[in-house]
Image (tube, each protein chain N blue to C red):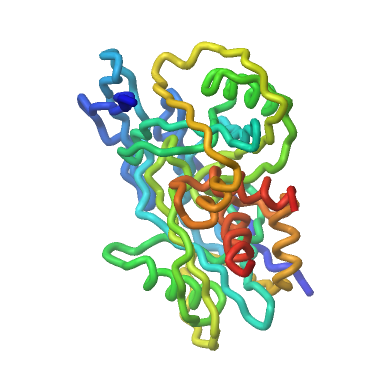
Length: 178
Length: 178
């Protein structure tokens, strides 16, 4: 079977916004049928999320999410610093947000929203946790909660967490446990 | 236990960009400790994704994703039109992208990236599919693939899809099947 040509060629583009976190671009592209269209893209530095297990419990963080104007209970997570590797970022974020350092095992990498952003998220499983805190970011206010692992799996399965990476991470780790 | 005040109060804000798809805002907020910080938010109309099952296969779509400059194999998905309900959007998108109409059962609603966007995604399970196509969007070029359900579950579990909603949707439906 001949593969359908789906490539979109960039004709021109402009950076609309370069902020502290995000960069927004609007490009004009040539479509496979020869017509042109516009594409709006949010450039993101990438992020990590950590499923941190301890005594058959998982460490979650409760925080206010300004973008959605509500508190959420999520797995610890954060953005990559410049030149930082995903595993180093995972170690740092877990220490900052929960106070614990753990062994890190990579379990998944995926795009969060390929329809409009290049954000890539790397998920890690953290175990063998020891207390070794780092200071939190000065504009983050985070509470740590531990919940039993079996309860977390049930809650993930029943639409009781609000964000994709938390549900996805818990279900992936559950699947690996068999 | 007294609950930690984590609320961030909007002091002022500006719309940086209002595009065809996205709206980007930058707000100045007062933090719980009295200091101020900035928050960059991508406003999104919301979206749906559909796990469409047929003869123990799942319908997936292959398309070029400009934001990540590569093709992906994803569950059918799309943005809400103004005033459109999630279930109506799911029926429409499945018809546009695969040609099939199905019964729709809501299985999950979550935020894709609460750290910087308010995009909410509604996932539906579609069954009892009948051929009833709608024209595709004129700037979308989509190929439909059917893969066996058991293979899709294995691929979701082994990091073989590239986007969050596809992995999440398949693992959630698998969990419901027991």
